[in-house]
Length: 253
Length: 253
Image (cartoon, rainbow over all chains, first blue to last red; front, side):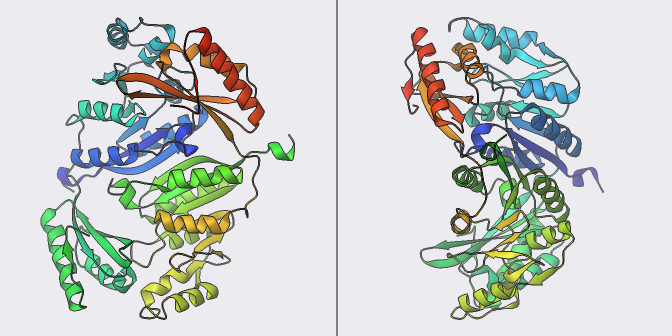
């Protein structure tokens, strides 16, 4: 396997009772997945756990060991339910320390906002040995410790932290995709798709049915790190659909 | 602990490359969480895995053992990437069989839609010993095997399956919540919230900051199985905020 064929994987750990209670619709999974694709890294697994030390620690150990990178979102604010840093430090067997640069960032940010209180200083606490991830949005930085990236839970703050990380992580070839749509019940073309995938090395075909305008249809996503291979597979699917009397729509429906 | 105090938990396993690729925004987590709350069951953990036998099997075994109930969404359609039934059966050490009632449902559903092809018959396959979950939307039923509930990935189809299960699962007291909003930076009131939670047995307070209209605010969600306790805690938080000169808004902002 050449270096370019190595697949780099990441996991995401979403930390927060608000997701598990149904109160908040998660947006970090799709946001991180999309960002990772551009970095040439594949999101391999996601877990969502409650604001509990043991649950966070067990997930951190499993996911950081099983993937090249682990991202976490949530639980890094100033309140009592923000225990992510403590839980990750405990899982790694590290003490929690105040990072001097984070303290300086927060002192500057809060200089005109009432000063750096004890609660706000909580946001400068990191597992010992960690580095910071810039947050141009709201002051409090994200945290990197080993292969773990600790991000904010608010999606638009997490987005700024990802922006700061763009291009800094080693990845492989991005996973590319070609989409075809068709007004057909996927059950009509299941064998066709299986045959096309089997005949196209390095391509996976996903089938995503929908019901719209009173009609049944499906989009077929052909994924590969080799765009030419994905396009050839799409052409094969298109020809196979045409042979059954169905028209494929480039780009999906 | 009385029977009413036992906490019933569920896990959700979301199966699908389309979530991990970022193509599809998950809606099943919030939908299931909301439904479970009404049944008196708490969503304790979520995992998202790819369409891979080993990944599905490992998650199924861990989550079904660790919770009263496990729900899965995705991967029960007719195409080659729909491997949920096979993966769960393998994880449980069970053979896959065609369920006669599922076959009958599909024969009826497809009688006017081209008949029951081999691909469509895939949707009648279940782990041996399973029962069916009615699907009034699109024919193909969900599947129950032991404490595992196998649902469709399309959220509005999963919703019909949950509707069929409503009131049939044993649960405990529903987790109730009272919400307060306040135009305050959560870092200003972190100690206040911690003190209020410590003083209110059986209540958890979650703090959810936001930035809106150029101002900083937060909603505080007080959760308890005892509504009177949650309301008393909310009154305490309101009084503590007022003492600092902040007005709490009932119901949140």
